[in-house]
Image 1 (cartoon, rainbow, N blue to C red):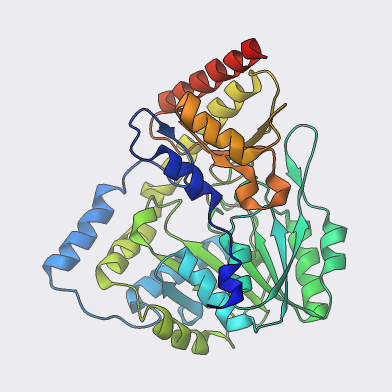
Image 2 (image 1 turned 60 degrees about the horizontal axis):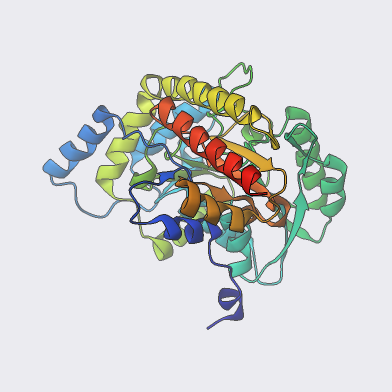
Length: 390
């Protein structure tokens, strides 16, 4: 087996989750998904498609109707994007992998902003690239920030690809328009590609004219070396459907279909029918989801801040509270203890890179806010027990 595969680390999130599997008393907040089911009208579109016998192969790039709907949706948010630049994929993970396969050769240098969802650094490594990480840094209040100059200095003409996830999983950090413009200008000068994971762009809680986080699509042209990844998972409540898409430069789009063919061939038609209905009726889903998630965030962060030794800041985007507890420097050990002793399932911060060591990620996408409050009660009780034992 290739050494790049042998050297891949197992998911620390899965390691914690495995410790709690089969335990009905564990409140699980470790995975990045809501516990709310996909809206009924979206599910019904898939059911109707299956009943009509749409169980055959589809176009590599996706059904024309869905591509047109995605292009219209993207254009409404970020300005004109032609459907020819859209490629539908079997999930955001697949979209990311296809993009990396299209852009990276073995030995290429890739710069990634971390801490970040581990797939974003693992995928280039699987293909034999050399990944260099430029870390975000936590402020005293628990919010994370980018050292823009350090990132610009790390990107040279030898850098093939910049990987950036904003809003960021796990920290919630979101790139500003000025930061994006500086990065785009710099990467134009160095000839570096930008792979922007913007799957959380609609889960954004700051004032915004278009209802989403700043995007590279707002400032990049169709000729720029910018590939943007999206997913139906988060803001459409469709994690299990495995539906994503790519917004591609004009020159790259005609070639990506070959990679999709050799990876997954195509996305299933009935899931595409559901996705098309979802994106055409997004105003019936996403604004409500965002309002609810903001209430979840505010409740969870407010309660966490009342606990002794906890440092946390409200994230401007995403669906996570990223926090640390004084006196518990080992994230993985702490997460496992919370499962075993408190019945509380959180993701260890070091699953997202060494910068996350000592931190925990709590997914606050809960249908019932009372479930978050129950989790806080369990954490508070556990912390009090540790104080008494100490």
